[in-house]
Length: 314
Image 1 (cartoon, rainbow, N blue to C red):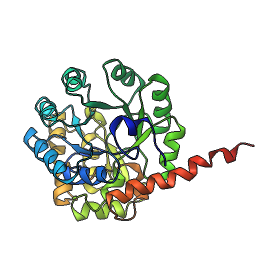
Image 2 (image 1 turned 90 degrees about the vertical axis):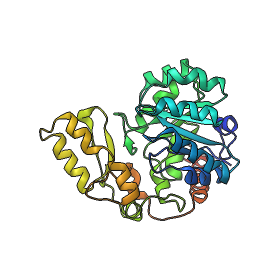
Image 3 (image 1 turned 30 degrees about the vertical axis):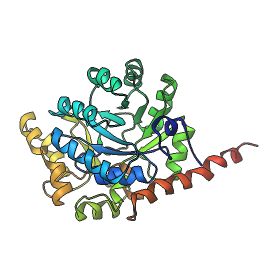
Image 4 (image 1 turned 180 degrees about the horizontal axis):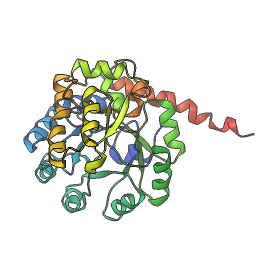
């Protein structure tokens, strides 16, 4: 069975993380992934601390296995959520959209394994110095907030820059992607878009339908002008936002245009006013299945590929 140091570090069966997708990755989905042997992660996003606490307790009621929380550091509630994960004795915290250094002392004192998402070698080195347990190297193929480097370029450079376990993310949806990540030096993978098809994922049916019908050219990136590029499905709202972004709208109005758009997509399936976040691999997601089956399936697909890698060398 495919296993790595990250499994022993976190007490999980398979080296598979479920991405912390805001308004999507709730306690129910996280628990299903953890029960399936991976690491389920609750997304704090821009939600208040009470919401995050409720979702942690929901997950605890459904599984006794380790569960993580992803804290989006740009959130106005980040300070409060940082305290909640300590109070609720969360095993793992992943972070994104910022530098978590100011919280590290408290988290480490609470024996939380901190695994930041990094989009550059410099950030990976910084997280190594401040006491992270591992890092998630996420390429621009991912959904949501994205960096400039692709997964294939970023992962090996991060692996060379740190002695921490590296989790590869961005553009991974099946065993081939898992095997490729391990060949690049990663010790685990994080998948987001693939879990949108899980039975336990409670996104609006319209959102799930769009993912299941997606094509290879179905995503686009907006938000670069504001310094926060975001990858989503190429919907009418995304196209309208892109026109506004480069059509002279001022920054304040542009920011307001995007506010609440993800929640509207997730909860209402609103095509005209909603951001349907998705990674580039959406076209590879073509069936609904239990989250546990997704975790097991990608590992079972990866194992023979990795075992047979030597066939290319005489």
